[in-house]
Length: 471
Ligand code: SF4
Image (cartoon, rainbow, N blue to C red):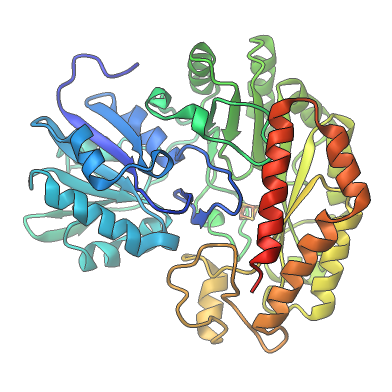
């Protein structure tokens, strides 16, 4: 909708991979099931760049497009630049893909990259890889636009190469109440995306805030200061999504609802406008009260994801979870049930310092909480986290963890829990949580549409495969 009368082109590409890779600014993971959503970094930058350029987002991963097929789509005399979203979990694959495309296009086309690995380690990545012309360190500011316009004065949030020299500009957060022009959602195959407990399609990603005010030491988002987005600007985007028939939204916030006043206004406007989107987001148990959860439900929220991490208050304290009252976990999950919102709990099994008993208690706690879904993960030494720094210092990190997929195998091992312990507990957690008669019965009772039935069958097959492939 933004690309009128502009000739110069920038392509924004989510690279091809045999697996479904969820790359974004905060980290990247391989999809464990069949879930997949639009890349928020590329979407936001498509809006910003469309002020001056014709843009085209191509999700080569979802569409299964090869480098040749992409070059056929984008290669013309007006092509000025390409931005690739890259992920630490598939970094070598991503670089090979970029080099392949670079070898097939005019050498003057500038290549930029974005992603968690770039935010935390951009300088060394650009030094090591001479095919990269720029690292974009923020996807919500005008800096990406200024880079491609060659407005180097007052440029922030970009590390770039010019005349064989590398320039690292300062990190500068967007202003709070920030604004992003409406992204080019229509470029993406919105009917091909889905989330595991989703209700419908077409589906897309939107942000209402950026970063996180908390500082959990295993998570990278707390290293990015929290900013919220202007409500009228979000509504403009939602109006547009409604007009093009989007039905499901993944709000890619780290902590939806943190800024209470603006969140309440947003939800009230969504209700007033009768969009009837169904939506899902990550939040925190200690920021939502009954009034907020009720508004969320009325505006179409069907699921909320909460990082619960561990049943051990000692662990939560040690890793700066900063949860003042552990009772809020149960209370918030109860409120979600009251307003028909599914609760999804995320757990980390075996953070350094935890014992076998701690992990067992966490699994039992997950069951006791009566969550609708649980995701059991092993600790990941994500780039930019204190957990990674400590793991290196204490030699907890196993060899060859440079490319981690965020899910399957142990990456951090201490004297208290071996690799086989971690795999045993992960397998046990899924088995105990999902293979309960009461759980299966309640999941079947929840099904109201054929789409939900289809998603449940797919998820069940994935769970069985996960158990079969346990190592
Ligand atoms: S509250 Fe959530 S998003 Fe924020 S730092 Fe902690 S784990 Fe990360």
